[in-house]
Image (cartoon, rainbow, N blue to C red; front, top):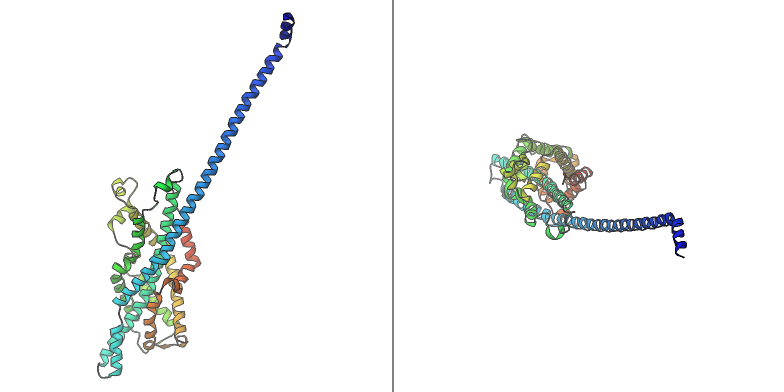
Length: 372
């Protein structure tokens, strides 16, 4: 029996070794496949978790951006326009002039002819100054606040992208400090609080130059009125350096100038930079860009066209055929407050915001994000 087993082993030894080898290899390959399958499943779960986390973070980012936009539309812009309207009415008050002219009408001998001419001339200059200033300021602040919102949104995107790898990003990182964000949005009040006196002087100088020689008896129709306001705005924008008007809207801070020209090696300058400083520098760069200059030109023209159209309608058609400048002034004095009316009901602001070329500019501004 033993010899029979030995003979069997000798005859089938090779087959046995091969069978064992095959079985061993099969088991090894099975374990390898099983490990590979488990690894793939784990990677798929991680990828799914990452996609879910990315969707959640993007949803948080969108919600925060929409909140910034809502604050700008419902709080910042209405507050800024109301404050600016009050300041302009205070600084360019026409009530005393109108009262003196009304008294002179009721009491013809209360003023000399030259005094009446002087009062009418002052009324002419201040009325056009206030209207042109309101038109320009409303346009610029509407665009300025929209630039702010897009810059905040861009920083939000960049900070979010940088935080994708951190599992504690949403819990431990506030993308932009709330104080800096509020301070940045509040800077829209700089024009009303600080920039208005210089703006008024320059706009009045432009109005005085363009209106010089225009008599109260001169006839103004829609075309002449449109051209007169356009010339005032054009003359105003040409005063001083190409971007002199930025100083009416933003503070001239030496830190911003140093930061704008600083390189990555200027560690001392960069170490003192706050988020607010960075936001203001970026805003200044946008405002002085050629692209923003084109948007300003488009917006001012669109508002001016709508303004003259509204004045023609309010005149009952008289402006189409023409009316004396003296009669037109009463209409001019009414337009300043209308230009700065409540933003949600202000068709001039809506014209700016809905202009296709303006929309393209802000879409590109938000999308053109620097490397993170």
